Image (cartoon, rainbow, N blue to C red):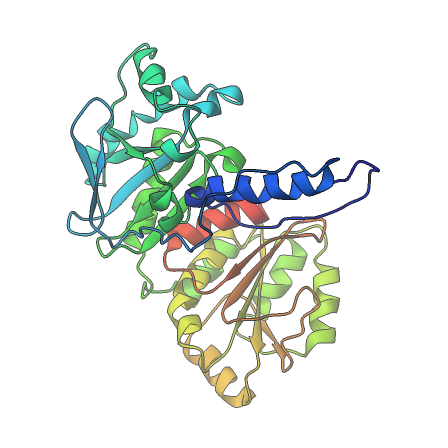
Amino acid sequence: MIDRRGRLAEIYEQQMAYASVPQQAQVYARELSRLLVGHPRAPSNLSYAAIEPIAPPVRISLPRAGGGTVRLGTGSGPQLLVFFATWLRETSDLSAQLQAIGGYQRLATAGRLPRLTAIDEGSVEASPRALATFLHALHDPLAFAVGIDRTGRIADGYEVQDQPWFVLTSRTGRILWYWDATTQRWPTPAQLAEHVGAALSAPPNAKAPTPAQDSTLLAGSPAPLAALHRQAGSLLGGEQALAARLRALRGYPIVLNTWASWCPACREEWPLLTSAATRFGRRVAFIGVDTLDPDTGQASSWLTANPVSYPSYTSLSGELPTTFVIDLPTTIFIDAAGNITHRQTGQYDSQGALDADISQFAL
């Protein structure tokens, strides 16, 4: 908020929350009234009590466009959803994109993948008739069902942070993969099938590549990345040495993963990182950071027992050259210019989610 004299009055910083859009508008209106001459009264009749999201494990039926219902939640296997709203036509050819992605349904049937369901975010539509008008104007009917989330609680529960937003959930309601079609572009049907298949076929305990496989796939890497591969599984110096290594890798994207030998979540996601490092290692630098580990001997033993194609550094303070780590594991993505592009706090649950973030935030 900027006042009439051009001075900054207030900044609001929050994640997207579809269920509380009216409450956010109420907050803004009250703040604006304070900045206006005479302080005109802004209507304020909405509660600020927390609005509970509806997460993937919860079984629920949503109204379906054209009649009937769409069922979400556990009990029917993995589910693939794409969240959208019709006002996206202002920035993209939404009609053509939705109709094109319908080609995924045929691939899903052939590959025994979950079929696609669309969810219209009714909570942010311009009017209750917006979706019906949009669907009626399409040249051909959509190849998938369209459910209607009128409260925003579904989008919040499925951690939707943009639109269009693809999300894949497991049969137990765990989010396995997501894709922001605004920043990562719309996937083709074949790309969507590939991502979904990868996310479903790589559980957290997936078997990591062998050292022989690493050697074959990483052959011919550029010199700075080949130097990392020669130090595979080594536990190197501290934070100053790490800072020097990051400077030496300028010009290459970096995936920096913080872990500890005592961290169960770190152990669970380890195979996903080792697999990604083998497949992306000729273009991306992978570095581990053993963080807040009181016994480097245990860390070295873990690296020996679980071979990986990149080295790790040690950090006894959690104060890294790039950021302060507040939880383990944390994965930090750095672009070729040395800028942090993303931080993932907490473990990755699927290969598809990790690979998607590497593609978006490193490459």
